Length: 462
Image (cartoon, rainbow, N blue to C red; front, side, top):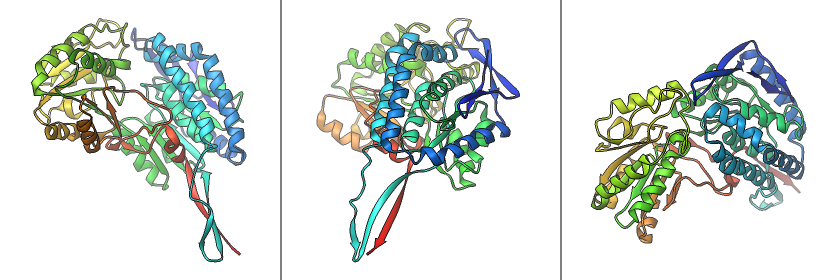
């Protein structure tokens, strides 16, 4: 099996290929093409030629096309799930029950949102002149997605971009290309050729796309390192950038919680998708009055999770080795897990570690694995300081029944998302995006749509 590019409405091969590995078994099962300058040029040219027509369609026309795409994703859910599971090792039932329905809803949301963009009222702000604003498509958008949610992150990127009238060249992660290619092939039946293109490859492919002179914007979901590289490449041609980068979410647990219920909810949010989630509930900060009790409850809930049943493997041998290296250098107390699970595939045992100070590598660096760290605090101020004491600022949560405390602390947390007595849920209507080393720009919501538009002032003398 060779997974090919999808450009200008058709599958297109390339000379080089790279292996596709099943993370459940560690065995190679196919290959994907690796694109270089010629393939990137062809995809960008197709998107550029399609832009003139697609950008002039009405929001209603784009809405109809996206609604048809959402219907296709819903109808072909099993096929999309198979492609996603084969390369990620995700639990298939979870993909079908949770991830694909969200993808469908998100496409449908942006289909309608394009018809609801607001702005300042037209009027005479200078005597004798009428002013109004236009929201226009930006142009060709280069988009780069990660391996943890290949299909969903493709949807988060293409749906607002296409709804706003842009055309797209998407590069999925090299280890997980198939669901994005399948999505593009489904879209080909409802979108004009060249509107949505997919090029496969490695970091060099992504660099070629980010540096290409034609795209007007680069949108990346990935690590902070990748975000810095993309921003540098885009700066050379003054491209706009939209960066959703790493997270390292703090979970603030106060002494008025229902300990077993909170621990169970946090473990679920920490280990979903094997913890390979930029919003995973990784850094648990617990009030000292319930610290020991809460650690015991976390360990009980974590130990009940079975790799391969409750969550899948890590993405690759490289990712597993990186996490094991982090854990081997950890000075704290490992209450459970900390080791590879089984001899096949890239599974990690559910892991809980306590006794770490704020400077510990495992606290400061995103593990991106089924790993929970626990730290203790004595006051609200200390909890906020520990929470904010990392470079990332994507997501956080507060677990408390005290509404006044929740209101105060949510204002002080330096994170783009704050959940209260829950963690990890998203809504298509609400923005998702972070601060600091977690990047800038918003996914989902009208804010996500606006990020793929440019604003023009038109003034008419009379």
